[in-house]
Length: 470
Ligand SMILES: Cc1cc2nc3c(=O)[nH]c(=O)nc-3n(C[C@H](O)[C@H](O)[C@H](O)COP(=O)(O)OP(=O)(O)OC[C@H]3O[C@@H](n4cnc5c(N)ncnc54)[C@H](O)[C@@H]3O)c2cc1C
Image (cartoon, rainbow, N blue to C red; front, side, top):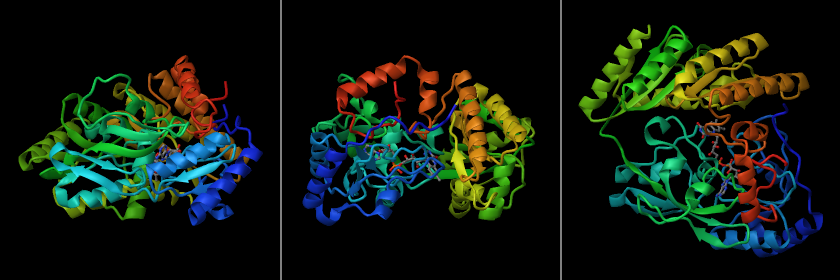
């Protein structure tokens, strides 16, 4: 099965030409058509070929987003929302050309309601910028994909990261959205209340819709108090299987881990070299606990005992902020560290997620596949959720290597689906995983097509993504 599906969106030359003229006149310097900037806005961080838009608009408000979408609707021109472009599956490609709508100038924090533990931001605010802004309030926003992504892009991909095992994903942490729909109208999906039973859940319809149903112009997000104490550390294991068994036991015992991340032996080698970590070159779990001083110490000790039952240890942990930061910086740099295992290669990142009881089996079969196919593909994972990544390192100029990588990824995705899991725990479908959606959701995909056709009858919002050609 070919992974990426680049078909299905015809160019509307006359409409594109008309829209380019109108937007250039209206936005001046804030509408760019240079090849370099167009190429950047379709950068795919992988081997999927770049399909550049015809122009890039930089709106500064929801009203300006409405103006752009109305022009595109009138001339039936694709409009592709763009955050920072860190998505991995060709999400921001423009297969039928059109306008990239870059939200980087919509980067204001609009309100922080500390007593309600929420805030409202524009979509171009990045997760690191938001946490820097919040620092003095004693609050933080926990969702942390490996890249410093925009919050609009994170909602649009239903992103998560190392903290999801405790704090959930974007699905659980967005209270409300404002979005511009395909006809240029603006919708508010919910209020600031923590719960609501008011009708269809439009917030969650837009979360994960990858810019295909609406363009998010503001987000109201849940915030959390920065924990009084944090402890964390690294625990080596004799094998990936024993590490996974320790994860399952930890979760089943109800120990409130905030992060529990698997790094396999090859990934550990890369991390040691890249981030100068002084740990054994064996499969390891990176673990973190949030709570009171006594609570995090107790949790760390209990985890150490569980790890020992599965042959793991010593579990070296610390509450010293600088040491923990170094560890998690290394974990977040895993992607870049992996690339050093094969200089010049590009990485194809996978992100299957399975019920946690199937995790050890899924990883073991995947490691066997990697060995049998002769691939270089380190594994790292948010294993507390049953989610793990392999990064297949390949020469993107070699059709044979691409074909082999696609075969591997296909087998991996189908394996996860067969284990009642998903082909994507957090990266989304984009162009790269369209071929797997029907295997995973069957008739559910027809319902998605009906929703898309009802909300975007001209198919102008990020066309050619998520839904395979019928
Ligand atoms: C090194 C690395 C590590 C990563 N680790 C993780 C990880 O741990 N967890 C994880 O979940 N992801 C991870 N990712 C993937 C990526 O960071 C996420 O998918 C992120 O949410 C994308 O945000 P962005 O701002 O880059 O969005 P973009 O790439 O710009 O856009 C992504 C999609 O969202 C749409 N979109 C963007 N903004 C809006 C908007 N305002 N309204 C509507 N649609 C919009 C776009 O049209 C596109 O379909 C990683 C990526 C890299 C490069």
